[in-house]
Structures are given as C-alpha cells and as structure tokens.
Image 1 (cartoon, rainbow, N blue to C red):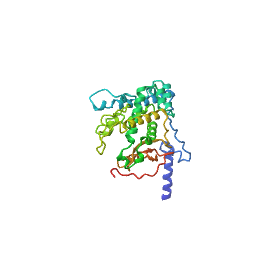
Image 2 (image 1 turned 90 degrees about the vertical axis):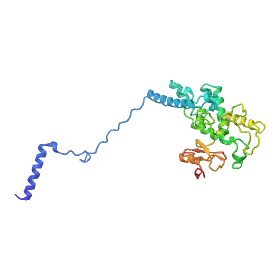
Image 3 (image 1 turned 180 degrees about the vertical axis):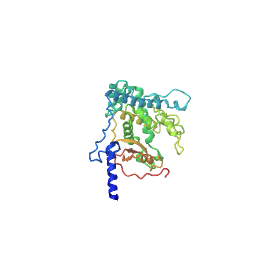
Length: 328
C-alpha cells in the first residue's frame, strides 16, 4: 500500500473513533466557535435599608464619642500635681451629647447644625446652654490666639515681623481651621484639644515654660503662675502697669466675639485645614515642611504670624513656596 493510501486510512479511523466516542471531542469556547460570549452577570451588593443606615451612622458616632472620651480620660491632673480632680476646661464636653442620642431624629437634627454658618454660641444654646461650656470655650480660644500670635510689644519678635505682632490678624484664620476641622457632633473645644493640646489642657506643657503659664491663664486675667518676672533684657515686668492685663482682656473679648458671630468672618476662599510657623521667622517654629509633606498648599493670608494651609482644590491656589530644610 502506498504511503498516501496509508495516511487516508489513518485519518478515517481517527474520525470514526471520535464519532463513536463523543466524550473525546473538544468543545470550543463560544467566543472561539464564532458565537459572542455573554458577560458574567455582576453581583451587586444590596442597598442598605433605612434601619441599616441608621445603625451604621450610630456605630460611627459611637466610635467618635468613644474617641472623645478617651481624650478626656487621658488628660493630666491639675498642673501635674497629685490631685485627681480636673479643671473646668478639662471637665467641659468635647462632644454634644444630643448628637449621639439613640433617637435617629435627634442625631439628624444635631448633625444639621454643623452644615450651617451658625455662630458657635447658637449651637451651644441649641444643644443645651451651659455657662461652664461657654466659658471654657472662650478661655481656650483666647489662649490659642495668644499662644499662636503672641503679645504685642515683644521686642525680639518686632525685630523680624513688626507687622505680625497682633493676634487679631491670625484670629480669623485660626477660627476657620477649628470650625472647618471640627468633626460632626464635636464641640469647638473638642477641636481645640486636638489642635492645641497644651493650652487646652489636653496635654501637659511640662518643660515648655511659655505654654505652662498660658495654660494657667484664666478669664479673670490675673497674672498666671509662671509668668516671667523680667523680660529678656532683665527689666522687671509689671503685669498691670505694662498692659498685660488689658491685653489679656482684649483677647478674651475677641474670642467671645467670634463665638457670638460678631467678629469678621473668615475670609479664605478655600477651607483652611491647619497652620504652622513660617520658616522665614528666625524667632519662631519652622513648620513649612510638615504642611508640604501632607500635600497641602500654602494659602496667602497676608501679614499673619503663622502660615495657613488648605487642601488642593477649588479656591486653594497658594503662591509657590520653597520649603526650607529643618535647621536651615
């Protein structure tokens, strides 16, 4: 038999075996066989019901309340003494309890307050007016203005930024940061504890002499324990005659005006999220690298003692900033 005939016979035997045993045949995928493949149906998670959404919201708010309680529990005792009591500032609420109510309607009403431009004093009244809470908030806000923008007539600071020697210039931007970064259900004092823990008594200011006496300053504006007896040139400082009491009272009055909505509203086009020391200020902190590391943009606020930062986005178009290395 010729080779050609042998090949034909072999092919015929193979075809016959495949026809008799169909399980040996290969099934081509539909796409390769010329038939379009149907996409596998996507499994979508069922939308949560209203009750499930309320449960989730309640869980998130309970977690926020627990975090606020943890901050309060971690607060030091009065001025690092052995006393177990806490100051009025430490006892003031960091959250509005109504926002964490078991009743959904109460939670919704509370959260709605934080999306409005209501004065802080109005929100406090809606949540149950408390003189102690209002006093503590006014006190801490005034302390922050002082600690972040200094007293007037500081000769050492005048040498570098004589026009930046007034807390009133920084106050609107500081207030905007605290208001914008306040969490839902959080008091302004709660936000202040996160941004300025030393002067809000959420952390001890041990070893930081200036912060220690600022944290002891009270609304009566008496000379706080630890305030320096002399200036950097050795001249005696008189709390009353040198105008420090008057300046103290003016800062607390400014803080109250912001809480009442009577002071100038913050003027930034974009929400400001934090602040820090300008690196070009040789007498202050150098924090520019911290904002840059977080991907924030410096916002031009004019002659403020601090540099303020916003997140990239609409309205946040700050000037180019050459970040100096720490220590330069």
